[in-house]
Image (cartoon, rainbow, N blue to C red):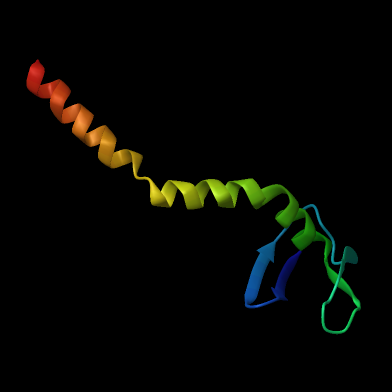
Length: 79
């Protein structure tokens, strides 16, 4: 299945295990008080990838490569 979902921006998604069904998210819209419906593949992606996105965000703030390069320079200078 190839799908493009529009939330705040376009989200393209390719999936081999999901179909195109729409499910309720269990939340309601603040303005209209209607239940929010999304594609099942988008709901599953959000559920399982939340921590991965957070990890990428933390790694962008702290560059471990810079610390590693300095450590390697010191190690090679000693030898």
